[in-house]
Image 1: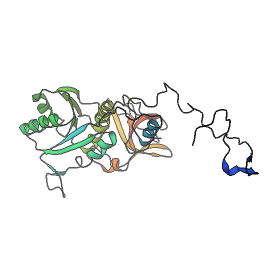
Image 2 (image 1 turned 90 degrees about the vertical axis):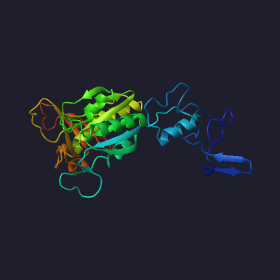
Image 3 (image 1 turned 135 degrees about the vertical axis):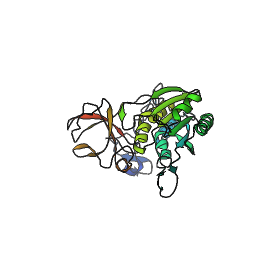
Image 4 (image 1 turned 120 degrees about the vertical axis):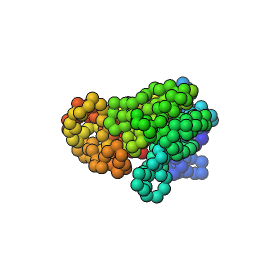
Length: 300
């Protein structure tokens, strides 16, 4: 690549030319003039990146090509995870009255895919004072806190009372959705706290329903319209007036529910593409509905 001499109209490649009598160049003028006009890719005032764009390698290269050496970026938020429950064990097979922690091990992957960084995963017993202490420490040390379990209203569910004692403001206290309805979102000072239900699939619904939009806003992405997909099967109306997030896969005939799906199961979601958003009145086969793809699944 070089500067085009003033008055030149084309560049003749060396390999298609010949030299006659040591001083005369003979060649056909190529159809492609091999000249890149100044301002061909962008002109002064063009917007090459906007708030919320991911600074991927190609965008970095584009900005460098036009002489941009520094850009302002959003720093991924640090996130502390509190896994609540006396019955939760972190290794081996659970014994009678125990359950294996299936959330603390997978949340770092989900949060990384959504743009955050988990800096701590702490197990907390079902004790009000212990939870208050852990919650207040996490709020001080992280940008966002995610708590798993304790969001219902049972006599051993202490998250709501711990948030109240800590002076937190409730923004969301339950959502009319299945699974995952006892999800919560609060604000403790300037720190958001997301409460996930203890059942694994319900917790993941809360991740994509509350945590994902929170991180989008934090990273400057703003609201994004859900993609849409055609249903391969009819879904009957719900018995209650609530939205259902149906775990399924994309097939040639459309989106179809997978098997082994309940609020306490992970087998179905482990082999799924995402959730179809099914209204309370159900859907017909062939109907197009919004869907929430898993963060690592390519959208259609």
